[in-house]
Length: 455
Image 1 (cartoon, helix red, strand yellow):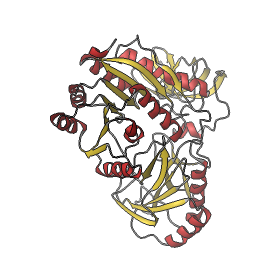
Image 2: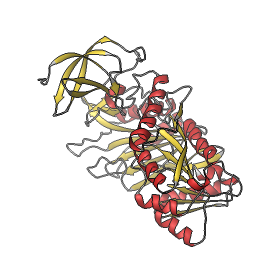
Image 3: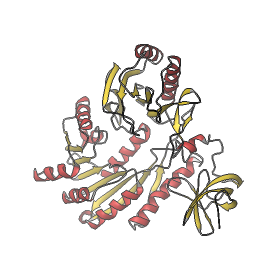
Image 4: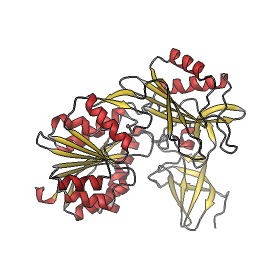
């Protein structure tokens, strides 16, 4: 019988989909951070439940040849890089296997292979967006990340996967806030001013946006801060204040005030220009987002005769990337501000055949069908929860020849593919894409074709 704080020797047999080591002891499955398959460890028992438990590595008896020995373990403790202890080549294989296993276990598909994961040449410093909490630690204003499953801030000097120019700006602002004695937010006491710093940077343009998330509108010394920031970082084109006075985990409140420059910054993706606001959904890894979207375009094999529905269209990054090569694009998105951004981005790129509406995808498709719009391809990029049953029915009712599905969750993707197959579509291609190196997250592009069109 195992008890809390027992230390035992055990072998790590596997990794969970979130990158935790898996060990089996006395009929129990244990999950262990910073442990890789094949490693033998001394494990301290942290918690024991009926069928499972949690452990911690006390010492390594043997280590994996695929272990990244040089990693700062703070990146594991915060979840910034929860796969960073695994060599990058093995991360790519792990993600390919994740997708294969989801298809096998959930959709019962074994006859379509998952292509090797598309990865990065330099899988670090890729994030074009940072959202960092500001708190007081040992009497001093600090920025960093929360320890996993807590609100204890761990101070960090190098965010590892963030754009280095973003890191420079964040630390410069941190030092300014200290110098001007501006108080960080205290969650327990509900006091202080600065809750979070949010920075966005155009990968190609280099333009930067800084957002101060504050607990109330009054912001002393802001003019001096702006002067110092813009003199030192001339690529900062927008400084915004967001006011969030709620006791919530949500980063942004509802009110935004532009303090300097414009409301947006600009960047390019696949040759198109995009205006990006503080709230815009814009993939955080521009290099790999281009590979992801290009894969979806290639899978769709688009022609000048195609009418394409771009579901969950956001600010138009996917649909506008191929709009000039097809007959028409119809985009739908529930967030009104994103739809307005998509329309502006279409104008920015002189695209006249892309039409965007703010609506649920199901309702919009029913209306388009009634209006006689017949898509040959539907491209869908849903959130982690995947597609609703009503969306799957509505999209298949339009009888497109192809459905190209971009997924950020292999489990919900496999579930949805199984449902599409019941409705007459067949899985033809699967490509894993590493949009988030050093983390357990994986993106996937799949192609489904209508069974009557299958060879």
